[in-house]
Image (cartoon, rainbow, N blue to C red; front, side):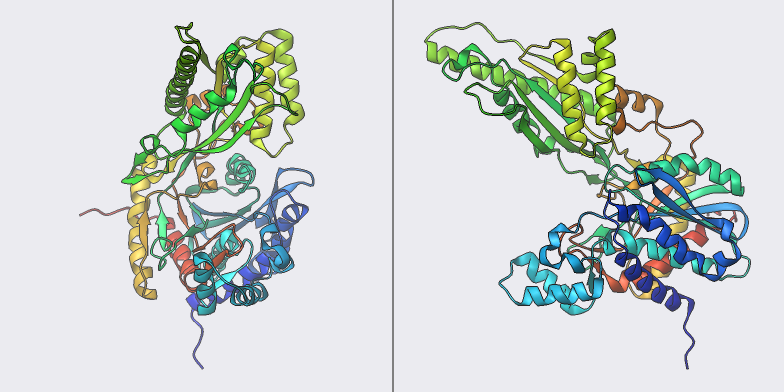
Length: 550
């Protein structure tokens, strides 16, 4: 009988563990999320290595009530050099499975149920593709299987293969974090704890591998990738203040809706506002929320409108985004007022006085407040800090600040409405990043050849990810601009001194339609190739031999 190879053992283990972890539900913010790390700790505690080394398997507090925790598992070899393998275990909601919600976390029965549902009714193009994928046997469904418990399983399989070696060089630190789908509190609390963990176990953390999932709508070429960076995200808001007037006298005031409409027109999906670097282009900004900030019905023009945008970046920093947004909003405000004045003149049949408006940053707004007003604003922020909707929290604080300052319209307050995810790229790590890329390039070629596939470098991971906070030490100037212009302290990234900095990449599973009902992982790559790629990448990075250059 043929003996199973280490690669085959890792593939079998990755598949079994992926399906097992998917059966442990862990929707973000739920008690199940809080329970997940203990499920995984108990499972790993029964493995031979951690039975012998129980002190190297533990959890650390992250956030919430009940407390949500990060699992930490250290596999020791020789020396201090350490690679961190990291992934998140929280998932989005299961509600979009509808009548199949009870099967959402049981991958194999769910896959069969989805096949039956799709076969039994007319299908659109996306559903035709999903059915073909499921019927091929190469794709498996399940909430969180793709995003991203199969990535965690690949990391664990690599760790277990590492400890099976005789005197391996270096160490692997595996971490499984909560809360990526909300505001990355798991990864950020781990980042803050890493210096103490490194001191406790005398580790020199030299690199990180994030294990998050990517998507590909074709043959998987875009998913079989090592990502050198992760996209940056800003959430600029515009709080529009008009001058309300009775609908029968429209030119006696200025509608906040008119101004808001021009801002959306000037921002939403405008290609010239997209960011470009590393030979790739980020999507243009999009409007995520536009609402009239009032309760009930009145025959009065809107006095306040709230707009929030998602602006993804490949190079722009906070000051760039705030300045560019200020220019766009100022132009849109002027355009709206000029149009209204032109309409008024045509209606009246003669010249009218020019309407003036102002744009203020949130920092400029707060600078107008004194004493008791600042204390009331801080108290409001504290009372709202437990909320999970950053836009709602920010909107209420900005409205209160504008009222305290007595701001009269037409005016627009701008700032950042939720947590900023910094752009990260291996290029930022200088020589250490170049060494990491060189070593990974050799591993990718060898692994691709061994498995008869292709693996390539991609510059920017397009999904907002924990990688933004993994091995990344925030710039103090950047943090200051963000903190001054973000209404709620709960959605700023306050960091302690002494954070570790090390180069990171993303190596994870691929599939299609993640977060959707048809979310599915490509099993042959995810279980067969990925654990091998992660393992060999970790070994190459742990090798202490100096680089040789021709």
